[in-house]
Amino acid sequence: MSVKSNLSKLINGFVYRPPSRDKDDNEPSLQDLLSRLNIKFPKIPGLGKGSPFLGFIIMAIIAVLWVASGIYTVSPDEKAVLRTFGGYVATVDPGLRWHWPGPVGNTDIVAVTKTRRLELGFRGSDVRQGVFQTVPAEANMITGDENIVQAQAVIQYRISDPKAYLFEVGDPGEIDREINEGQPDGKTLRDIAETSLRQVVGTRNIDDILTTEKEAVQQEVLTIMRSLNATYSTGIDVQQFLLQNVNPPSEVQDAFEDVVRAREDRDRIVNLAEAYQADRLPRAQGDAAKIVEAAEAFKEGRLQIAAGEAAGFEELLKAYDQSKVVTRTRLYLDALNIILPKVKKFVISDSSSPLPLLQLTGESEVGP
Image (cartoon, rainbow, N blue to C red; front, side):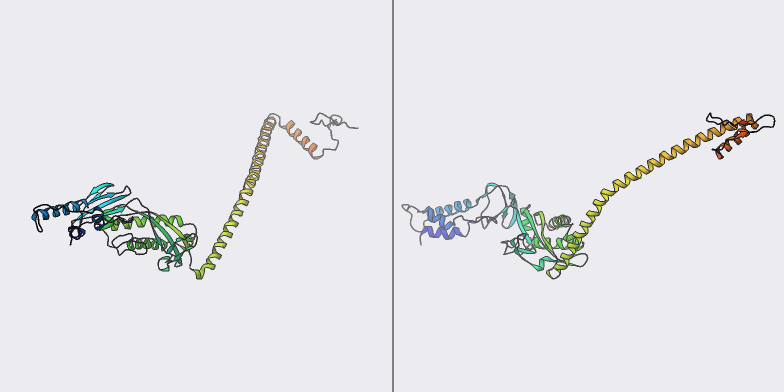
């Protein structure tokens, strides 16, 4: 067996390239590297088979290649988690790095800026276009008013803490999403999303969820998911929770559509009534203002007339106090003029001939 074959077998078990969870690892194996280098060891005079000097050279080459295999590169969108003898050492930033190769050390490279996606309640490429398959076990939920509703959602998240992501949670993973065992964005994140959504849906009426409260539901579920991820130390930052479809079960779909149409008719009638109100109310308010103003004017007029009559009565009282007989006679004659406006009237005195009654208008009535 050649020296190159022996070196390949010895070194191949020690060289370790840190795995990348988000990129295909196309680096050549050590066997390919040795084949490409086509290493040949020169024959040294005086050294035969089993020479200690030759063994030292071989061991030195093995050591150099083993140490060199610890060189790796971390991309700008990644971070590397370093382990030595299985224990956590550090988390390093992007750049050209070195760490002890296996079996002494291990390096896990994690993409931390990539936005990842989790589908809840369905599997497919586009739920809004109908290209999906419903998963009833995840989608069917009971609302606060004891109705059944089917909810599908998309969760967008990033890995914020690679150390917690790799070491804090044991997870079986999800093969269909290519999530390896031990990564908490597998079954753990799905359970967190499902639990949070069921908790929110279970406190609301079905009408709120189907119509006006979707935005509030999304925000509340997002808050609960972030809290649970922090509690479990998953190292995951949930960025968005987006409800895709929220529908009643197919068995009662027609009834719910009737309810929606009735609600739309109700809203339309309410809008018409509000428009009629907006048209009639200003007119009524204008008419009311006119009536109030007319009443105020009538009031002021009557007050002025009453004040004038009161002032005239006071003046008449003063005249009466000064000359009671004359004033009384004058009032009597004025009353006769008012009672008999078209009759000629004369004042007959015992001591003189009849005298015409003078009118306040300046005319006089003359007897025959």
